[in-house]
Length: 181
Image 1 (tube, rainbow, N blue to C red):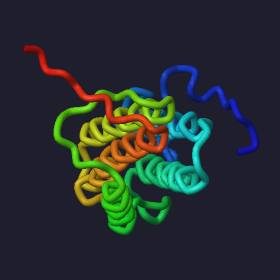
Image 2 (cartoon, rainbow, N blue to C red):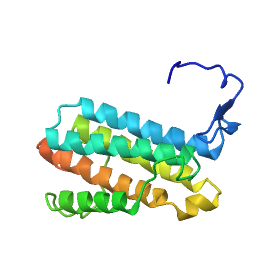
Image 3 (tube, rainbow, N blue to C red):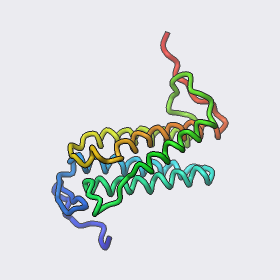
Image 4 (cartoon, helix red, strand yellow):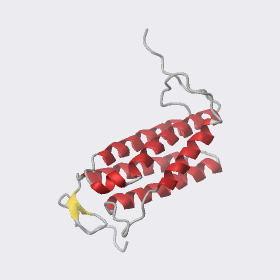
């Protein structure tokens, strides 16, 4: 990256990794934007006082989101990009399972609240869900064969569990939803 501004996007279009030009509201760009939003929110989460183990996990997820963005930008062309694989999904499932071992079982819905870190991780979770929905908007054969949709689904689940863990580590119980009478 030799120069930050190129002026190529001044009229509502941007370039993909393959060099093609698409409108900035193209589903590919929308999905990449949602992934970027989630990644930025994870950066905010990491700025909270957190233990080094959780920081390492969140940094790994941020790096994986860059891989996801590269895959989206290259429109699944594995010769031009990195790709999310089944290995990434299994790692998230392992994280979910290991985190769940440290938490009380859920018996009711919880509010996205708790400690500042917990609340921020809930924001990250919701942004991962948005990225998953934007990924579903992509109408292309390569996305049907990609591990990315499943990865984004597991990511939101993992972030939910990490939000609950952060709440517990702050010495706070889950803030439960109270159904109307």
